[in-house]
Length: 289
Image (cartoon, rainbow, N blue to C red; front, top):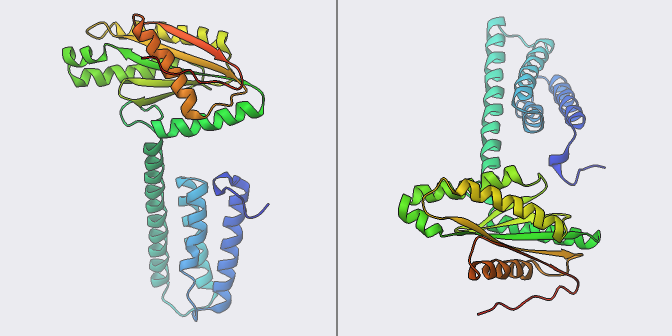
């Protein structure tokens, strides 16, 4: 189907077809019109397509191809020009195409980094609050549609303030990074760790019921507490978790539920885990004073 709904999904074979066909059309028109009309700008199209969708190295190769085709068209058009001048022009065009491909790669790399920064927490590399809400909303809709169970864990670092006071904020930052690194190593690849702010994190566990969530979060808490022993103070992790089958709760309500369960743990002595399962209509508990 053309045009594609998402240009990032273009297959390499389709891109190559566009590259070759555009170069053939441009060179044919360039040859047909002779020196009367300039087609220099249009030779950039194949270079742009190749560099954008096939990678930098392929862009370099296509740049060389375009410069060679342009040089050949100039020779075939029987333009009266000194050979060394024609060769010089060809080299200048090649440098121009290579420069364009290089600048395009720098722009694309900057855009990718910008998009990544918009989705991730700058300190820990976990997804940020905004991306977490969007992802959780999609997961809730998917699990509701396919009649599946989803679990959400809410994590808080106990006595995190003491770590900052004893070791400084740099050490506190190291602890937060360690939370994410350890979580990513311990959890499944389909699970997602997010930093919601400060020393609070959330974990999305797709297709996970209460029993499986308890097992996964117990392993996670054990791994985290083991790593936190290397930091001064008595830092530990309190976790509240909720699982729901075919979830009907809005995102904010589900997070509020898990958050309240986490605070129950902290009020009962910290360094614990509390998980509850809710069924439709997924009634939300009211926070306790």
